[in-house]
Length: 131
View 1 (tube, rainbow, N blue to C red):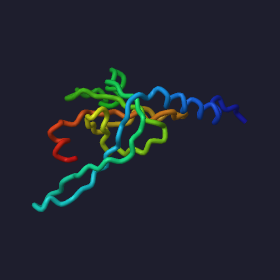
View 2 (cartoon, rainbow, N blue to C red):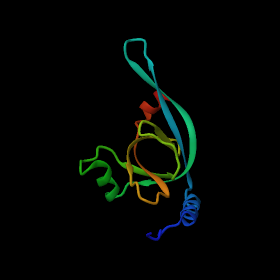
View 3 (cartoon, rainbow, N blue to C red):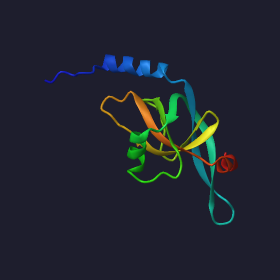
View 4 (cartoon, helix red, strand yellow):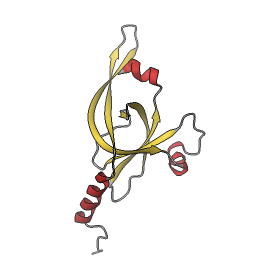
């Protein structure tokens, strides 16, 4: 039987250390579709769970992974949440009072110590109208 390089005990320690270097807070917002009374729908966003996170602008490598070499229309950002954070691609995140849409996931490694998410800032006017 092959020897496991990273034990469960070590992985737990690494995950705890990762939480210590998450200075920001991200709140997950989940959308609910409702009729707008004119044959269309509107989305209302409700605050859910808040997680500690690390937040930064996306670097070149992140941008290539998220956009597949396509040109960017807006700056991208990366948030790292705890490994067990419950976030879906249809959700939004609010970090430092700014709303972001999820544009993709960065890395699903064998030893997951965090959830890395690619983000794009939502136009403040659009965000204000729908929250």
